[in-house]
Amino acid sequence: KQLKPMSDRPEVFAVVRQRFDREATVLESVGKGHSQIPDLYAYFEEDGKFYLVQEWIDGQPLSDLAASPWSEEQVCTLLSHTLSALTHVHGLGLIHRDIKPDNIILRQADQLPCLIDFGAVKELMNTVTVNDPSSLAIGTPGYMPAEQAIGRPTFSSDLYSLGMTAIFLLTGRSPAQIPTDSRTGEVLWQQFAPDVSPAFAAVITKAVQPTAQNRYSTADEMQSAIPSQSTKAVSIFPTVISSKP
Image 1 (cartoon, helix red, strand yellow):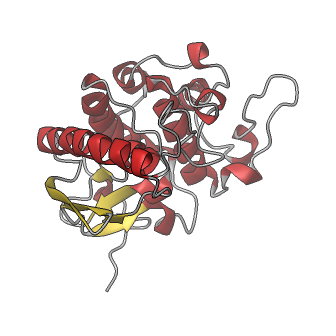
Image 2: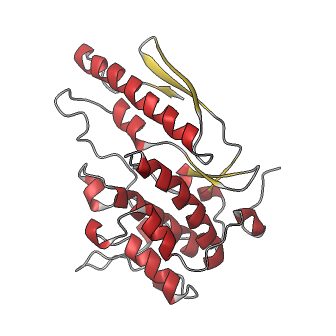
């Protein structure tokens, strides 16, 4: 990946250089600790640009695998494996901040979901002020909750994003196509996935609560709440998962 800071002001560039080294070191440790997060092989700066050399994940993003809605069992399996990776990330004190269908790749070799494109690097390149370089909101509209939109993400912000990803898979609809309650802000998604069991629907609905304290507080807590978890890879569902020729 080639990364170029938005500002070329010397004082800003100095901050970016310092933080790039720090963030790259963090990414290196995260990747080494879990098989569903790409390894970082090297990082360097050249001609005012910054580079990350990362493991290539041979597979397809979930956004390319949702031509039709997924079944409850499929989404349960995917969530269970993804939450395992998130438990590792959060255990290191990190927040991904940009979980969405484009940033979860189903790896061809074993059909496990891999998390890519951590938001910290995007924030770094968008740094425009020395005083508060972390004040910018990083994430994708529709997949990030309100607290993240004002630059105050928590661990449960990632769970919200994962819940919205699950809703996308279950309904085949993007967040912009899912209405919300004008009074409470709750996501009104179940009408578009009527076959989902009440138990699993309750898990997803809790994950996407508009207020952070009403969601699951940890990835482990959410994983434990998922009914009928499967330890198999998602490839047991060939009607949804297919490799490119």
